[in-house]
Amino acid sequence: MNKKGYFADFGGAFLPEILVATFDELTAAYESAKADPAFWQEYENLMSSYSCRPTPLTLAENLTRHFGGARIYVKREDLNHTGAHKANNVMGQGLLVKRMGKKRVIAETGAGQHGVATATMAARFGFDCTIYMGEVDVERQRPNVFWMEQLGAEVVPVKDGTRILKDAINEAFRDWVSNMDNTHYVLGTACGPHPFPEMVAWFQSIIGREARAQVLEREGKLPRRIYACVGGGSNAMGIFGGFMDDPVELVGVEAGGRGLDTGAHASRLCSDDAAIGVAQGYKTYFLQNAEGQMQETHSIAAGLDYVGVSPILSHLREEGRARFTAATDREVVAAMRLTIRKEGLIPALESAHAFVQAFKDAPDMSPEDCLIINQSGRGDKDIFTVADAFEDPGWREFIIRKAEQYQT
Image 1 (cartoon, rainbow, N blue to C red):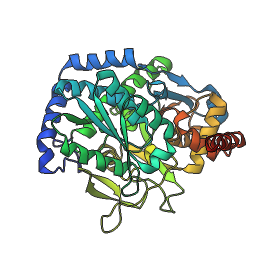
Image 2: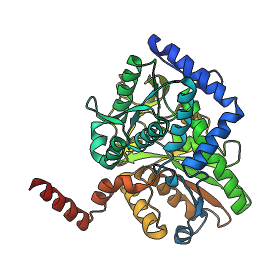
Image 3: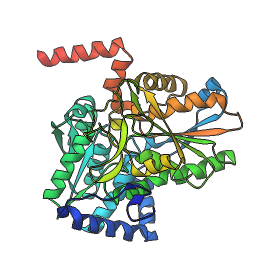
């Protein structure tokens, strides 16, 4: 970072004046916590006793044999409490909320995993909680909506705009402006105004720290490549963070949707549809037209269906430190099905994007090499979308039967 809140030309804090004091308070609390070794120790203790840290690094032996080439390891963030990497950031921010003495938290969510994690943290610490979620995502992620509500959170469907993640973020910021004194916005990814990109990446770096130590213990050397899906960028920054200073290739995989040539995708770093702009308080690549209006996005994975991307990842792209590719919906479904059948692992649709590119690359790598895929979440939240994509007749019969029961 060459100046506060910036990563080369990306980042910053473009704020309405009313929020400046709130962000100054948050930045001071974050910097104080980061400088305090006792805070990180408290955080690690919380994650080891309340979540599932360290999460395992699993050798995917069957997939390795299937593809030949490099040994395939999977970092199992799906085994975190609430089923995804989101708990890492959320519980860390929860400790900051306690430090700041606030009593209410709000959050946005797309896939619902961040919403469930935030509602869980609020229940754990005794905070009031409101979750903003695009109306489209409420429908395709209904199981997560159910659990958020059971955890005591108010889930607010956002009906404005395209009714997905970016619209949920806008609504959360509107709430925060009206309730700054007692409320903290638990932003879920490494985007937004400073200090959020840096702070979220710091909490998520626990993934990469663990993975680096684990692979060195198992292999006696570093992996050749690291793979992570890229929506906003929190899970990618989490695992990349452990290998940033190592001669390891970092590969981020975006949502190719129906294909980069169709316009129906959410790829900011490897498509021609994105440009540098300022929105939602920070500067990065956004999917926008020539007039700067944000374009509609599409992905089978709700958590990747976002118009912007972490300013840190934009910087890594510009300096050539990370490579970015895209996986289509069709490729994602196929990779998910293969992983389930070969390994008994059920990656989230978001995570399956990373599997797609790793499966493409592994056969051309040496058997002496290894690679790590960050399985950022588990796929049970996607059961409606996946069952439909798999065209499973038993599931369809079940849904019809249940619908008929409710009609009688």
